[in-house]
Image 1 (tube, rainbow, N blue to C red):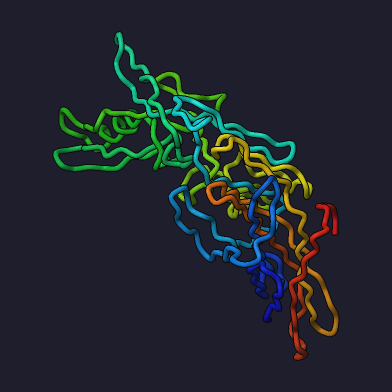
Image 2 (cartoon, one colour):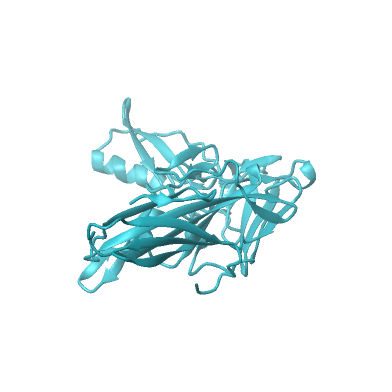
Length: 348
């Protein structure tokens, strides 16, 4: 079934069997790009961002694919950004905050540090000044270490929550592996240099050697992370089953129970040279009208993901929706995308 789309929102419509539903459903996805200027969000009509059929790498994280058929009501927020020192003068520590309506979170951003031995104890060095700090998983707590278990025999050990981060202590896992592998005397060995994370939660910063906090990052969670794996399963009538969390990509801190009202203020502090970057959540209703079997039905697409791109002064919203459809009866089946820019965020 082809989708007639006269609007500047890339969109798709697919009809298929939904596993466990027992009926054919029409699933629609649309993506609205907005330019942010003067505290307003204006719909991009000339060069909107395309729908992504797969994760797409960027220097600040992987843009998540857009076509995942998520049916739960949660609203996800992800940020691709960099902390920028206030006033442009290098600093050693600052905060970044993100608010969407009444929900607000903070990150603590600190310059590069490492552990060094002082008076028989390991202590963090003073942070180095920075002007710009990427808010990426590489800067959050975690890490991977190449452990030599025998002469020139290496095994990579990782923090399963965030293999690309920094700050994780491989010593306990290395010792356990060496014992299991019956490593010779003097092994296992690894580079003892241990950096500290640059991006942390303000309420759980690393302060002593044994600290192992949850990684803090607002870019999409890698699908290989244990943070993602832990939300895949939910209790079902016949035991554990795959839940809607399999399609979530935001950090758990930014998986909200429902979408905020249209017009709710989105504000990010600490990621632009101007300090505050804010705009009201756009008022945009998205629908698909289906004409099948002699009748017209409407799919209301819900805003499910807000992706913030302050480096580009824009953002985008991903809308999704679905509806059961009867089998084909031989008559023409048509579909058309429709926008309602007066929508207030309430029921439609």
